[in-house]
Image 1 (cartoon, rainbow, N blue to C red):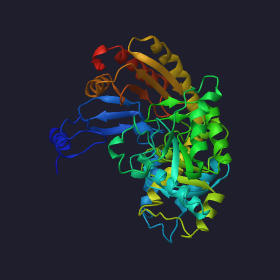
Image 2: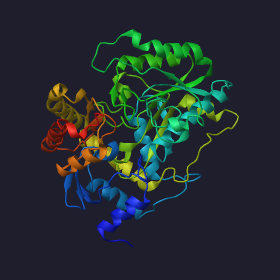
Image 3: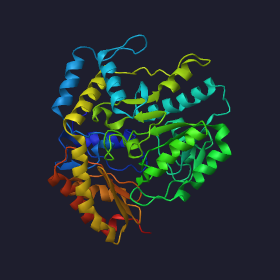
Image 4: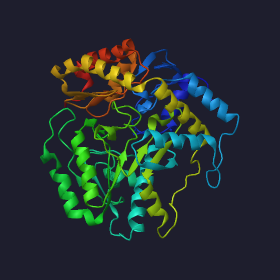
Length: 434
């Protein structure tokens, strides 16, 4: 057992592969000693405000007593049972709440282990649905460029094929169809010309398209782009016109992040299949869910297989379900809508002046999401070090410096994040301008 912090970090650097990092040129990792509210206490002594909600999931803050108690109570009862042939109260109540909260018509729930798995499940549902209808040629997906849906193989196949993170695997993945990404932003007047590429893909390939999958309103890791709600409405109409299912990946946007409980609500549409994750458990445990309509579920069940062909070992884990039940109740009790509206107002006020900064291409805010798009990519190691030294935890990627703070953040804590952002984007040395 290693106890010394220096030795622990050295072992980490030598042996542990962190997400999207090199083992020959590893980025430094910062040791977390404890966490409380919106703060991470690092072993090196710094106390930093987490502007990332631990990759957009810890909406209620760290060490939350309500979530702690829910897990403690459940672990004393039982921590896990198989979900094949057995069921339990935490899972049943969670599924009931998800059916009640999500857009009307999503009545069947499949519990998954992670966001990527929820997307895999959604894609398999779409393929099995079309196969059960005898439309075996409908075996490809349509999506829009600049999207991101996860790192497993089917999920990778619907991520951006050029500017995404998975080009290396292009020869091994299913080749799907890609429409140009929408260009009309959330706040602009909509122009029907934005639909040209999407309509063309439907017209040319609808006989082979099982489903259209997209991130509603906000394209996350593919560029933190906010697009117009009328584009999403048109997606629903085109899917209906061409007998194609609509899959909404709300793993990042679900549970209030965009100012609506689900981003689909901005367009007042219901998808055929919906994926949720991340904030589902308040960031406490890994859990996701894929919901679908009764038509999708019954059509699959009447098909050749007679069942849906998926079954994770840890499906419906009681500890995760207990955390999710507590998190969703806390979301409602804390009045998430007011929390997010307050954050949005403050982000808009405190970030808008950065549009004039010499290093900034664009600034955009939606709900509890604040994005600074720089003109050049950041020096990741340097900018991360500067953020920590200034008391904040922000994890940029490429040209994007963004925050998705916990909903429980105070105005003073949020101002700390925005003021540090303002200071650091003004520093030329954090950008790779060569």
